[in-house]
Amino acid sequence: MFKAIPLSDGRIIISKDACPFQEVINGFSCATRISVVTFNISKWNSQLLGALKKSHTLQRLITNIPNRRDSYSKGGLAAAGNTVSRYLNRMEPSHFTPLALVFFAFKNHATIIKTDKIAYVGSTNFSDESQRNWEAGVILREPAALDAIESQIDEIEKDSIRYFGGSLQEAVPPIPADTRRSQGTERSTCAVLFEAAKGVPPYLHWDSKADR
Image (cartoon, one colour):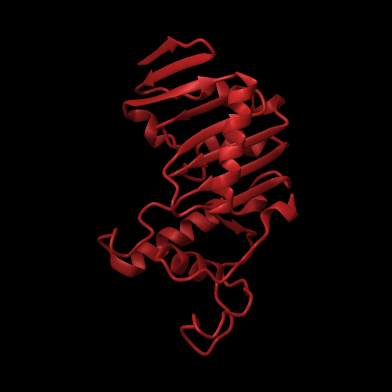
């Protein structure tokens, strides 16, 4: 089911068993910039991630990690750690265009799928699984609205952790003494993200703006 309600500068989309932001995906091939902000992102072999991998433009990908806390998962700490590890593998920057920037935002529950010409803002995650649910959102094309959305994505990025990829045992900068949990001064990327998700004071301060 797919229902569109016209607006003066866009459309309200109500959907079930359909992709409400297909219009945005259709524009990936000719976009100069793509931004994806989501709570949950599809599995590795999904059509949605495939559309991103086929695009060779600048991309900004920001996702939360559902079930990342041991208290969320029936399997406890081990299951939560496995979830984080799967997301790191799924979001490995080398899987995407060399121009892709990948972030994890543990306080994000928004969904924004956007190019320089069109944007979807709504309830549907960037995942094939979400398409089975009743979802609602808006499609916008008005330049002022797109600029405002882009500015908000900048704010979400500031509240995110940049993921540079590499081995899960990749060394990270030394941890300050007051937050160090052991004698070691290295942490796997997985451990850093998992502990940050649990509210441990952040160890890493990456200036994402400088890397653009």
